Image (cartoon, rainbow, N blue to C red; front, side):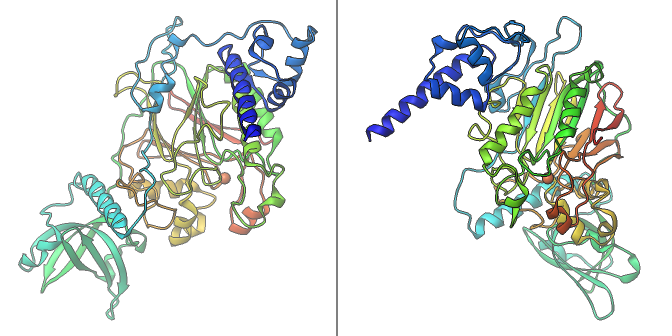
Length: 516
Ligand SMILES: [Fe+2]
């Protein structure tokens, strides 16, 4: 008991020292932390430390303690960002409240990030009625989107369907619960809504693709009734409207889009990391104000059988230290938005919560770091709700299973992720068939694409693409990880080091190759 108390006291003292250093704008790396513990240093020992780096190392503390001036280190106190220039208040960020932008002395709007992460339900037992509630929520959210489609005239609920006379042109909205072929070669679709169920007959010559009729997808159907059957003329998907004018901002600022860094992997490509950091700190990267990192920040532990042999770091916390060191090297005037992926150490069920203090203690309080869930809607560089660029971040764990399920995607989807992105946008759902990702039966379906983003960013496939769908910029970010034996097994083809950059003033999107 006495030992436990002593340990707690030691940790409290170390915490105090870290807190003192944080107030000075300094972040302690792993080596420095161990040194502080080993030498039992207190706040008074470190309060006069002045270094130009944001990242405090063991050597810097040693030099300070020994009154030895490190020749190559200019002794300048690290200047914290003027809090008034940043519109991101960590407390407000936690509650996802909106923040007011300000204009700095250069006339450029100060960086501003507003986050709308889906809220995960409190941990609770999931029962059958949890799934019923979840699918009702999915149906209602998708119905609201489908109701905007002009094609769906004379809508009737499925429970009232049999009351309509023959040959009346009607429309219905329902969730697909089964698809089969009749003896005559027609497609038979079982549709369900909260009021009832019907069978929809699609005559063979209608040419409606089977990709539109997967289970759990909510669709609209236009057709006619005859002898108690509903014959479909067309299928209506929720889709996104065509955006004629790409939204821009008045300032010449850019966003950079990364994903799947996989720190801790034996196949992590250090050269890509170094070249990227050199670029973003150079005049070439001077326009960058926002950096989006779309999950799989570390390689993780126990993600697949035999993964240990593909890791250089088997401790998950040590993997996150490596990731933090990378984040802390990014210039502090750049706002960094980070979501988790399926390799991160949060729950795999989607929506995923943001990375917590337990995983990233050294960056979670940084004013320029925004930890968001997966998926998340992020507005950057905006003023009121009509301004700024809206980014939908989704790691993309459902994409591999969608590619497997859809014949036309099987041919090209893994190396052309933009086709999968179009597929989910058309259906306004990030994982249309239930089970292509680990979907949590929450009270709301967070995977419904309820809002139209300006930019849709994904990752996961380790491929790379920049494209456009109806005015939405599609970005599939590649990776800092080379091809791995595991990727060989699942058919993924890595295209590492391709980094997407979007100029928010012109909306021009380009990729920069850091692979060599
Ligand atoms: Fe990944």
